[in-house]
Length: 264
Length: 280
Image 1: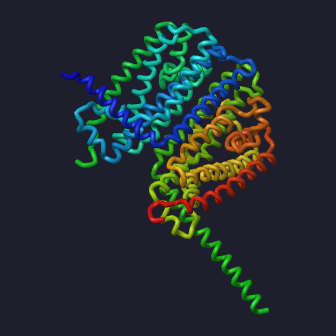
Image 2 (image 1 turned 90 degrees about the horizontal axis):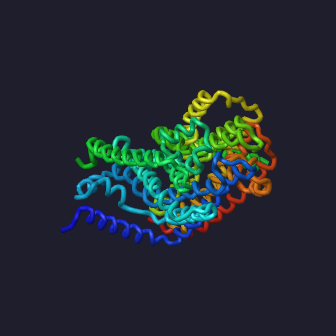
Image 3 (image 1 turned 135 degrees about the vertical axis):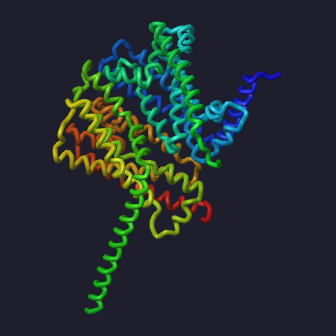
């Protein structure tokens, strides 16, 4: 007797081991990707340093605390280039070439298939460096293991929100076939998460909290890690994440009704 | 005497033929690519919106200018980043992905048979895309001033002319640099990975994330000898009226242009011998 959830885990393992095996053919590129991540980290720190160089600080955020935000941002960048970009940007191609038909016929949730089918190890160095930066800044701030553990919750919520938004944007390709770069717009907007949300003027803060919830991706987890976030924010992040996830499921089913396929 | 005359006659005739042939090819390439680009207007708009990074950082720097000493006022930051956004629109280049695909799939082979260097196809497609993109940039700038009228300014005539010159040179240089990186597609299947690394320098040193006034003086000194700040910071400063050394700028740009042109032709010749795509 096998539970459905077990089947999903087994499928996931197959997907990812195949993806890693395929990418291992380009080992030199992996070295280049690691170098790029290192350069990206150095550049990001430089960008932050430009603000703090003359004694200016983001209101209520010391240099190390802003470093935690940057670490979480780098981590998210890594996770999205490892898991989100390779999968969700391919929905567009599936629709364009009509291969979505084969996905829909499989005895497995099509949203699950489309979201997990592959992964790219290119994002792993970013994940590593992001975690390293968080650890480094955290040790200078004297953070304990409980601080990190408690921030996993809002961080997870943030990831779910990000995934859901991304998936919904990808799903719009059912209507507007060539929409590949709509997810690039989202990626561009998420760049705002490099700095804590108080670094921005009021209108930006409103936009990045309520329209594109970037604040929930990096600032809220960082505040929780530093032990100064009221639980209300984490709760808000949770509500947002669950709401968006459900919305993405309904939206996908709704979109599929309009899918006319390439062969029928 | 008469033979000499005839020769000079022939020479001017061939010159005329050559000129008309070149201009005809340029015209055709340009109009075909322009028509192609306008077909994807929605995509163009989205690509443009994907480049909002300077506008995001504009917010952070405007806020910072109110609380710290950075040498620029809040409004100056706003103008700078708007100009940086516009300048960036002119130097968006993607030739490496196209070229890599052509080499890997062997589609370069038929192009090699044409009596025209394949680079010109790419150049024309980039160049004409600028004109399809421009109206969108204009609309966006309009919206910006409508939302934030305090930042409105009229650039000086000399500044505008120099900006136009700088922005064209910046595009040509960036295209040349990326096309040179693209040559590595002859040896590796994923030349675009090189571009991703190279892009980091462009991202952090070109002035997209902050005007070079905010850099530490020593770093700034060094960076001004690299090609990167001339992609965004240099033209943007000319338009806004921040002090920059125009002579040094144009000299550094042409210097790097020559270096990359030589490198490009050398790699192209080496690469063609290496090329084993379908039909080669």
